[in-house]
Amino acid sequence: MTTVGPDGEVEDGTGAVDRRRHVSDYFRLERWELPATTGDDGPASMAGRAPVDDHQRGPGGGLRTGGLLTSLDSLGGFTSGLAVLPRWIVTTSLLATVSELAHVGPLRLRADVLRRGRNSVVCALGVVDEGADDRHVAAATLTCAVLDPDAMTLEFERPFALPMPPPQADPVRPEAFFCIEPGHGPVTRLRLEDQLRNPWGILHGGAVAMLADEAACRATVAAVPAATGAVAATDVVLHYLRPVKVGPAEARCTVLGTRDGRTTVRVAIHDVGADDRLVTLGSVTVLTL
Amino acid sequence: MSLPGYPPPEHFLGDLGLEVEVTTETTARVRTRVTPEVRSPDGGVRVGVLATLVDIVGGAIAARVLRPDWMATADLAIELVGPPVGPWVEAQGSVLRRGRTTLVIEALVVAVDEDGATTSVDGRAADPVAWASMTFAVLPAKGDGPPVQPAAELPVRWAITGGASTLPVLDALAVTVLDGAAGRVSVPVRPYLHNSFGAVQGGVVALIAEAAGAEALGAAQGHDGADMVVTDLQIAYLALGKVGPIVSSARVLATGPDGRAGAVVELRDAGADDRLTTVANVTAVPVGAARAPA
Image 1 (cartoon, each protein chain N blue to C red):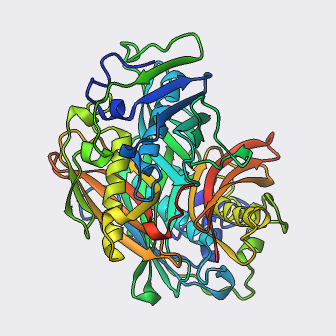
Image 2 (image 1 turned 90 degrees about the vertical axis):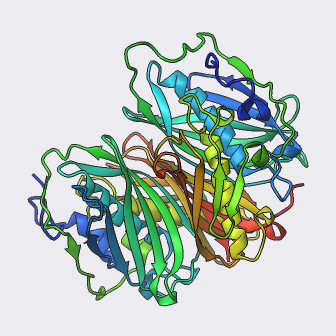
Image 3 (image 1 turned 120 degrees about the horizontal axis):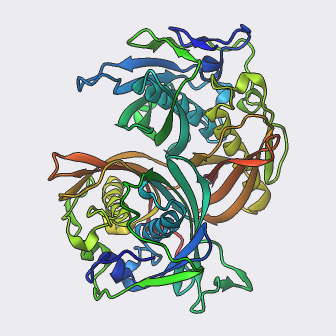
C-alpha cells in the first residue's frame, strides 16, 4: 500500500523514493492552498512559487518550457486532486501558451479549478514573473481524469502548504535529471528510471513534457535550415493518452512547417517496452532565437 | 450522417458550405472553399473557421465511433502552420484514443485543389495549413437510441450548404466590440449559430475567442483588432452557452521577442447569470509581422 502523508511525502514500503515530491522538488516548487471563496467543500485554488535556478535556464534565458510545464502539471494536478478527494486524478491534457521565455524569477503560479465533474476536472493555470513586475508569462489549461485511488491512502493537513525546497547541492541540467538520452534528429529517448515515476507508478507528466520539449527542439535543429542558432519551445499541446509504464519513452517528431520563425512539431511519444504503444500525442511550437 | 433538421436553412455552417466525408470507421474529412468571407487580415483563413472544420470533422468521427452514445466537445487546440495555398481547405481527422469517458482526435488541415488532391507547391505537397487536436466527452445514451443512425456503407458523404450570406464571417455572427482593450465582444445567441444541443456551436465559440483575443492583443500593441492575425487557439469548453448574449473578456500576457503575444479569453453567458462557458488561450501577431500567403 502506498500512503501519501501530510507533507505530500510518499511511503511505498521501500522507503526509497518520495515520488510525489521528487520532480517538483527539483524545480523547488513551493505550494500553498488558497482559501475557498465560494463556500464549496473543495479547494478552489492553489498558488506556487519557484525560483529560476541557473542550471534550469534554457536558450530563451528563463526557465525552459519543459520545466515550466512540469511545475504547472504538479500544481494543477495537485489542485485537481484535492478537489476530488477521496478520489484522485491523472492528467489527460495540457494546453499551454508561453509568451515570454526570458524570466527573471522567481515565478509565481496559480491554479484555479474551473469545472469539477464526475469524470474530469479542468484547471486554469497562470504564471507571472515576480522579478519582472509580475508580468504574465504563461497560461495553461490542465484537464485531469478522476480515478479511484485503490490502495493509495491520501492524507493531507488542510489547508495544504509545502515550503520551497532548498537548492540542490550538486545541480544537474533538466535533460540529465529527466534521464533524456543525448542525441539529435527526430527521435529522442527517455529512460524510465524509478525516481521519475509518480505515486501511481507511471512516468510523471512533467517528464513527458520535458521529453516533448527536448525532442521538438532537436527535430527543429535537424530539419529547419534557418534554425542554426539556439531554439526554444514555447507553446505546447499534450494529450496524455495512456500511461508510460515500462519505458523507454521514445518521442518521434514530425516537423509540420515553419511560419514567421516558429516551427510546429508534431510529437508522438511511445512506450517502447509496452508494445511500442502510443502514449502521448501533441505539438510543440519551437522558436528560432 | 447529417442530423435531421440540423442545421436549419439559415445557419453559419451552411454559409461556410461544408462538404463532409466519413472515409473509414475512425477517419473523416471536411472541407470548405476559401472565400473572401473567411479570410483573415493577412489574407489567410481565420483560425476560428479552421477550428470549425476541425470541430465538424471530429464530430463526424465521434458520432460513428461512439454510437449509441453521443458527445460534447471538451477541448480543442489548433495552430496555424502554413498559408492556405489551395482553393479549398480540408480538415482530415483520425482517432487517437477511444476511452470510456473521452475520445481524442487529431486533425491535420491541408490545402486542396478542386479535385480534392493536396495542393502542390514547386512539385511537392504544400505544408499543412494547421494542426489540431480535440477531446470529446462521451455522453452515455439515454436508452431511446442515438440522435442519428450512421450509414452502414462507407464512405458516406454529405454537404452542409444553402447559406446565402455574403458578409464576413464575424459580421454574419453579429460580433459587436464593446471594449477592445478589455477584449470585450458580445454575440447574441440565435439559431443561426446553434449546435445540435441548441447552444453556441463549438466553431462559433472559437471565432468569438479569436475576435476577442485579436481586439485585446491589438489594443495592447497599439493596433486595431483587424490588424492582428490569430495563429493559435487552445480552447476549454466548460459549459453550453444557451441564453446569450455571449460576452468575452481577456487578460493579455507578455509580448514575445517576435511581436507575438498571448491572451487568456473568457466567454460568459450573460443571460445565464454570467456563467463561465469557455476559457481560451489565444496567440496573435500583427499583420505586418505575419507571413503573407503565397
